[in-house]
Amino acid sequence: MVVIDISVHEGELPGSGTIIVTAGTDGTLGDAARALDTSLGGLVARMVELGGELTNGKVLDALAPSGSGHDRILVLCLANKEPKPLTDIEEAGGSLARKLEELGVADACVTTSDGLARTGERLDVAAAIAMGAMLRSYRFDRYRNDKDKDRPKLRSLSFAGLGDGGNSVLAAVRSQAEAVALARDLVSEPANMLYPETFAGRCRDLEKFGVEVEILGPEKLAELKMGAILAVGQGSARPPHVAIMRWNGGRDGDAPLALVGKGVCFDTGGISLKPAGGMEDMKWDMGGAAAVVGAMQAIAARKAKANVVGVIGLAENMPSGTAQRPGDVITAMSGTTIEVINTDAEGRLVLADMLWYTKERFKPVAMLDFATLTGAIIVALGHEHAGLFTPDDDLATAVTGAGAAVGDTVWRMPLGDAYDKHIKSDIAEIKNVGRAREAGATAGAVFLQRFVGDVPWAHLDIAAMAWTSRDKGIIPKGGTGYGVRLVDRLVAERYEGAS
Image (cartoon, rainbow, N blue to C red; front, side, top):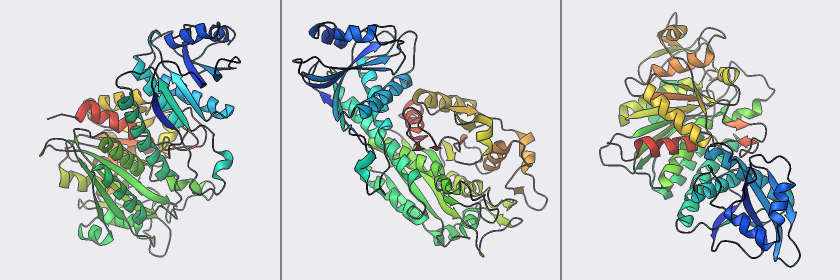
């Protein structure tokens, strides 16, 4: 849930309350800051002069002079010494929200300015500050009875001096921030509340945005011969479901972009049981599905002129007398036989059926799958990038660029025939793991590649990015909503209006 509200303040400088003006990290004052400085007898310039090293996102704070009508004056420092992406301005917006929370400020007004070199246009800067503040202020407190105890007092930010276009720009910011918050909410939900059936039901909330939602229950999955996802879920009392979400914003008959998500609502590892320590975090093994749902909301909410379909496979991986065993051979929807070496490599089984079903039914122009697939990708890349696997150079460039523009960074990883040999089985067509600890993330990717055919495809292993155990700038501890903004940007840049 998004905590703060954002709105347009009519006029250039509010006459009361807490006001925030901007300055460059080289000490340059923006237009609004200079005007306020003049009215306050040089206070703003003095704050900057005594503020020490000015870094992007640093916030200087002073009580307003008596009689000025204001409560507090804050100066938000924005990087302008060299070209910086708008993601840096978003980080500054997050710093501002954090500072206002510390000060106990409920409502404040930001005056964005022209005159700061290399920070972009006024509306772009305001949008970035607003986005950073909204994402940083996110809290998941649905199950707390003492919600107000630790909740920040900050309720709203208004933005002055935006002129024409301000309302539409801030509305777009709110729409995207709410989509990210939805993905964060889903990842944060406990598994006793969000399991395959209830997760599928939550997807129906997208119908109010014009998304067509279709739910496939276990009987339909059996009819479709989705043997891989059914094998993963057979150990649970809660059977698998599939949710299909369709946004038809493009031309009739145009092939859609397909988004496919891994939705393992809880992953014990199955018979190949995970260690007990930290297993509670496995409620977020559906982070790929959450990213797809959030992205579908973001796309539909802004009425994107593109056809997009989202397909998520939802299952629980539980140990029981009915669970699949190491050594079992299962048959995926494609007819491919799979030797199950490790039941904890279950996400790729879910995706095998989802990718094949999506390819066959929707004939997409391209497919992207999102999955918390491997711990190996964390070993390789840490928590700084998702792993990107694709044989398509153009798609790789597009995904990488879209991710960089919004802070959902990716790093391209290898594929190829040499790695495909890692999943050769002695008794079936393929097995579900590679060679011990060798190239584990790539083994998962080449497994998935078996089910995409000739469709342009990219796999994003987001195991390191769907959840964070510490605050990271505009991302509070918990679910991150990774992937939502990347997809929204990719659709806008590559697929809207495409023939």
